[in-house]
Image 1 (tube, one colour):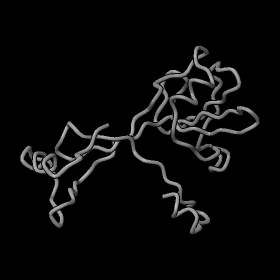
Image 2 (cartoon, rainbow, N blue to C red):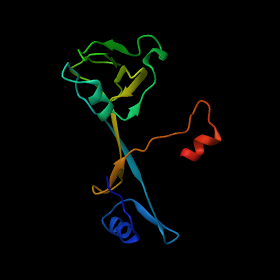
Image 3 (tube, one colour):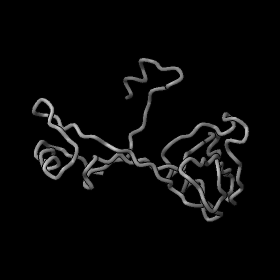
Length: 147
């Protein structure tokens, strides 16, 4: 996506009704909304691990760590892939569905989600929700440097 890169862009946003303010004469601070949506509406045998690695960018927790019955295991016909869903089947996946597979000896759990940040009151500016590198379970100073 794009973002307001200079103060004139910020002032234009404000004039157009976006929920932004100029701070200290040099920063554009805007209210934002996050929109989460499913990347895949359904899953079938035409999909591949390569496609999942390309299109899914948000990691997920291993579904087996949730309470029994939280996720249902689905066989959607994708070679080497198990799909987990809270509700629904292979023809109706939600953004909280999880694709699990192994690639090059590494286990992957990827959420079926695309997360986009939008500037409130503007249709012009948005960007993919950035990753978080801080380990919430065991934070370290090193993690802060990556942030």
